[in-house]
Amino acid sequence: MIVGIVVGAGIFRTPSLVAANAGNEFAFLSLWLVGGFVSLIGALCYAELTSTYPNTGGDYHYLGRAYGRPLSFLFVWSRITVIQTGSVALLAFVFGDYASQLVNLGEFSPSIYAALAVVGLTGLNILGVHQGTLTQNVLTTAGVLSVLLLIGAGLLLVNPAPETISSHPTGSSVLQTISLAMVFVLLTYGGWNEAAYISAEMIGRREVARALLLSIGIITALYLLVNWAYVRALGLDGVAGSGVVAADLMERAAGLPGAKFVSLVVSLSALSSANATVFTGARTNYALGRDFRLFKFLGQWAREGNTPTNALLVQGAISLALVLIGTLTRKGFETMVEYTAPVFWFFFLMVGASVIVLRIREPFVSRPFRTPLYPITPLVFCATCIFMLQASIVYTGIGALIGVAVLLAGLPVLWFAYTSNSASS
Image 1: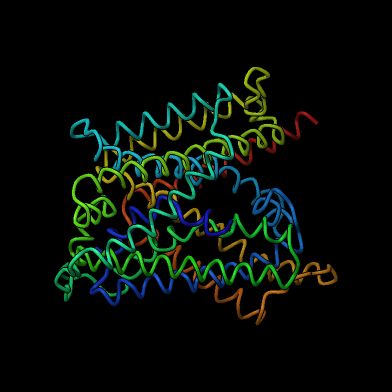
Image 2: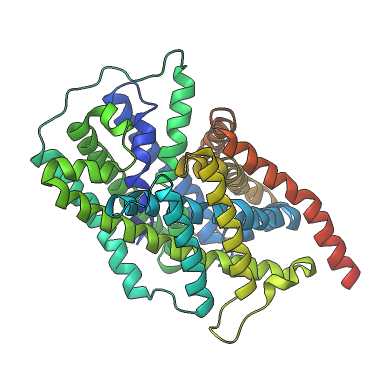
């Protein structure tokens, strides 16, 4: 389950951005190994939280318990305006990039496809016509099998490309390039925290750690192998210059039909992930509407279709606005990563620190799983989050500044929300 959640559309898009910031093939692959190690440290912290405080609210619950409702409100605000909607737009751009390999709609083809995906998926969810569990599972399996197919094709069917000595832009610092590369690497590893909730609630203490260790080990191995296949087939510069690296690899291995086939599978996988993100994100918006009078309009549930219509419409409108921003910057997917990264790492930092805060505030609570090497492990994870937060602000583009500004805009909204609640009570 963890492997299925983590191995999504990102691995078909981010390697080119990582390669553009790696000095050589060894550094390129090492970055993916480091990403697996960081994910493992974070998963061990989450294992304690999820097994000690099992709650469907996840991060929202931990933040509220450790720091109070104001920070948990800002987390929900950020999910509505940055994290979840940014993820919808990000996945829509992956869909657009690969769908354009099947039928190109012109200069703005990826953006047109991305906008159509947002509108279409929002409309389907409003009608209550969303993909069933079986379809989601089939498409997730197809994504994992595509990774295995790419590994086989890149390592067995293609002659190695010449090794690239260095592709650092002139004057770039090593810290800058590594920092920027890690933003994209850790985005691709994202999702294990969602899976930790499930494992903590369903199996015992030793099995939690075992499941996390095994699954992240498998994911790291898959990512190392598929990225080795990419650079072996295309070379580091070839990977860096490709916006659809999976299709380019398969074109070398099996010609145009192979590239078309992989583009179709990746498009469907991205569309499936985007649909799931639209579905779950609207539920967060709905919960906010139920908790705060200021957002009461989001807390309305339509009987016809059994969906939170207003929450879906607001989420769709924000996602479309983000697609427009990605189009104006002409970077699409990359801009959406920049937009979500600082906010994501800020709240990841706060959740990591909550392991220590809750140990201090609630020392007598039973903890079925305790983070190994406490407090070193959560401190290392927090230090990593601080590094990534700084990197995602300093070394990325305008998207990061917009994301931070939207988060800060939540502060006056927080005041109005509490004022509204107080007035109504």
